[in-house]
Length: 286
Image (cartoon, rainbow, N blue to C red):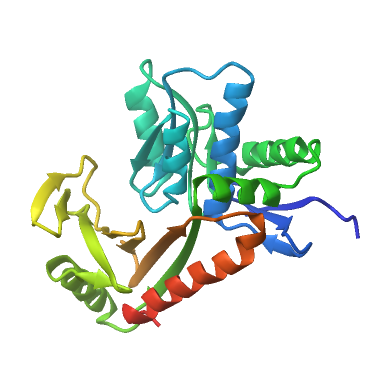
């Protein structure tokens, strides 16, 4: 009725925010949490440079299951990007650790949480809503939309697409089944997924990574957490993370490919969606 440019909604305690935008066909879509985060992170980095207030010690922080596209454009902008375990307590902990040495500007996670500046030290949808409105207004002043900006970023840094599958194992042995799944992945990791070699296995419980080609090990400098990640040779990332309180396990999928131009958006997105669907079936998660 209003022909609005964006639609924003928060959860009741206002710590997460969802963003609706119009896509390239004028249809309303909900940005996923990764897309919201990458737009917000990029805006903060670009705006600080444009205003001349960027500092050499600027840093951004995200969780290990949040899109690696943020790492890509942070690196291109020469801004440090740190990855921490899931949960804003870990982002806040890193801010405290880096205080006086590095300047935190934004942090976030894939589950619709953002933390702008270090005053609140937790995910906060109130400040996020304000900034997202500013982002949309900034683009509108140039005759563009947030979806246009998202597409520009995909063309520049590659089209990253994420998905999440949550599995609940009911019954008395549900937790045991999930533990067995994790042990199988840990002790017998797949060598290939969707025909692509698994290059690395990251085991956050053991705090070590393995290069599967030669079996060499390297240290993961993060606290222990029962999370496994498979990094494929083509940049695909698959993460397995059981719940600590209920018989549930989450699988996070991230795939990426170059986007030639804005006109190729729909075809490229379909290919990425199909790749994720194949991986889900191959891993027996559907």
